[in-house]
Amino acid sequence: MKDTVKGFGYLREGIGLMRQPGLRRYVAVPLLVSTLVFTAAIYFSIHWLGILLDWLLGYLPGWLEWLRYLLWPLFALTGVLLVFYTFALITNLIAAPFNGLLAEAVERYLTGQPVDEAGGWKALLNDVIPSILSELRKLLYFIVRALPLVILFLVPGVNLAAPFLWALFSAWMLAIEYADYPMGNHRMHFAAQRECLRRRRLLAFGFGGGSLLLTMIPLVNFIAMPASVAGATAMWVREFRK
Image: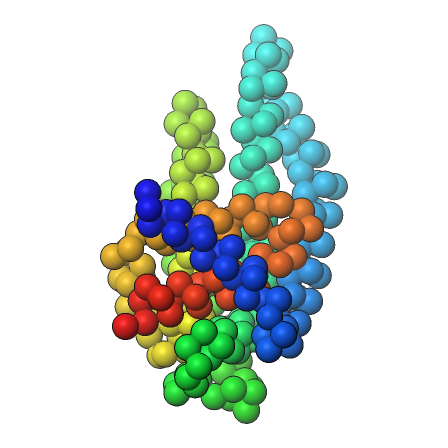
């Protein structure tokens, strides 16, 4: 559990890092993208989630009406997880090149050394297509593993555990998502990144769980992406870099 707490602590450190004077300009674009996309997510959740849940629960027969009060919170939690995690993926896809630049700046701030493999603002345009391809590769990895979990939601009895399994899976995916930026700056390929995180799985779950928690809190989720990028970079520097 020590690693889990430590992983959560890196996210807290990321929130502090993104406020540092030398790093604020690198936070601006990811923060703007995050604000716009999560505003849409909040609107979608408020406007459509209730309608969708009422439609799903409307299939309950009359004699099982009492289950509505048991299943509504479960479906609501599932819906919130799905909506905000989906919008988190969209946010990272749009802001991927700028997140790599933020990770580079945070690593330089923490170590006092340049990231040799990264190229600063001049390399930003050159990194746009590779960054988007990397995001699409992570998206494919996510879809292949998410489909069995979605099926679990349809299995009576088993679907009661599905939201908790989804939360664990989301925490793992967010750890992979944000660790990719500092690791990618050092030209680590996707398979090597996953292997690196598997060796410290509880650390990754702690960090990803904290990021998921930030993502689910309205208004606070605006800072979730830049804070997670900064926190993942701090975790890379102190736990994986050597």
